[in-house]
Length: 245
Ligand code: NAI
Image (tube, rainbow, N blue to C red; front, side, top):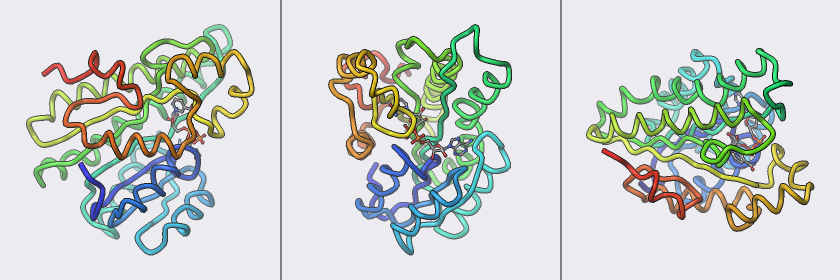
């Protein structure tokens, strides 16, 4: 999978990893880039930086109609979507005793159900065209439970499981699926935590280094070549999680 001359969608693209991916896809020669985010001004700024090939859409990925609107806008104004990056995510910072029902519902909706809505919205047309690619941003916290945020860890583990389900069931229909499982990336979500020496040490031990979002985007561009279900940027665990079917 190469993004050159292709239409790509990135959610959560106003900042952090999503922003870095959208800008990197532009550098790689994508024909069209749909920048979607709850943060309308942030999405517009990223689209403006890319130029004519980009469109910005304000969307809440926890709302299925919004995700359908992302897909409609991309296909109408840019062309058939080759790659959909479901990347938006939130944290609560709360453990089991502190997290409220509202936080559980919201986190599961944004971090897990949004991937389901994206798959429902893009897969039929991709299958009809004979292929497509989904990249779902999950987290190392969904592979190895991290202390701290209970709803986050559960939502990301479920998101990994969902991506693997799609990979297995749609592989024969030309759909590639990868999950991005970063840890310790210097973004708005992690900046404060990374000031904490203990957390920084943990990130460095498990992934080799605290990464900049641009480095993650580089792993993504390389990893999209993988023909199998692939966990990025953790090649050391990819063997375990490669396609079973
Ligand atoms: P970030 O906070 O910089 O970016 C997240 C973006 O998602 C923001 O622009 C935000 O406005 C948007 N967003 C939040 N809720 C939304 C919604 N309901 N609808 C649409 N957009 C929404 O954080 P970062 O780090 O770039 O996060 C991107 C993804 O990477 C997330 O899924 C996160 O869980 C994941 N991740 C990040 C790690 C890190 O160390 N930074 C580690 C592991 C996973």
